[in-house]
Length: 473
Image 1 (cartoon, rainbow, N blue to C red):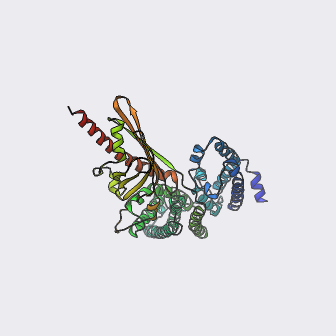
Image 2 (cartoon, one colour):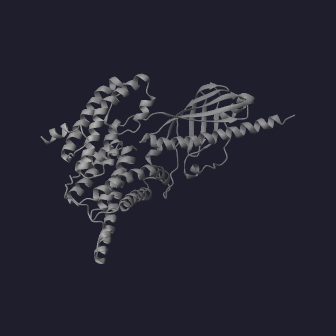
Image 3 (tube, helix red, strand yellow):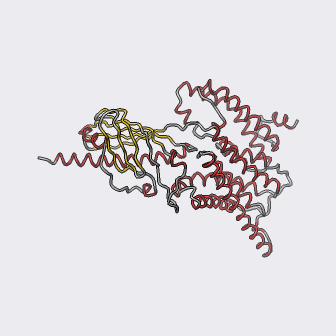
């Protein structure tokens, strides 16, 4: 009867809903939505739909890049989702009110990966009655002895929180990377979010802590985990620095949730159940992501410059060029692979171009040879995209084989007035890391920097020859 009453009250944002009804209704509606999408997606957008699609932050890009007919299908699926979105928002607001948590936390309902773990947390947090009171903060104790005892408990809570989250994080990174062989949203979003919640909840177990205390212990949990991963040779410094922004942001979001949870009166069973459930939920999420991992999308990066030389001169330095000077870009001194030179065997379609990088050579069979306008090639061999910084001699993390994979490239030369030439370089690539849009920021920046190192070298060679030729009698 209580569940039926809850359903009838979904038309209003007022009121509360208990954790049992919230869990039951949320699970039923989510399963119903999965069944509908699984049945409609092949008809609407011509592709299968799985649980992982709800975790993928790149769905908006798929809609934007889809054909007109598929965009109509995506639009139809969106309108079907509106009632489910409304019910989900209403239920979450009522559950937050019932747990006496801030209603603005409803924004986490829209965060991929985080929303699954947030739903689980709301299913576990008990209702807060009118007589519930927030715990006394450590700073309000009266006597010196009580203050010292509270300080010791605070230090002990922080130590336990850091020890638990570091050990858990290290094990789950190993499980995700070496057992499942993926670098997904579960690793870069779900794990730090859960570590932030768990660190704050454990830290506040012996007494309510301030926001800054919870944020600090969440920050230290991620920092300590990164240090352990570096010290045990799991990862090099470069990759840890690239992952740091998303890890820190997600851990701070988790710290907010953990801070709000630990402010209420202590309930040992609830705290233990929350920590255990989140601990088990993250590897389950990673496993689901691995089971439904979709093919990586193909991205294109285009960079262009103008050269004060004819297209014929520029072409000669595009197909092959002598060794480049040492790099001045800072990121190349941090281990990112950089171009050294290029050679070509024969000319025309079927020729093989080799672009030498600091970590090896790209093998590039020529597919289009339109001298002096267009040179297009595929890529059949990719060297590692970087050399890891580490205290160990050899650190070869699995992502070095799939973080940044080039599939094709081209140089397009356009004649400009006054004998000038516009040179545009394009690289088509993919990477096997989620969230794809976050890692695309790094990939695009790296490729643009590589492009301009090559393009500027071609410009220097072409303009030097042009000037030398024009100076002849």
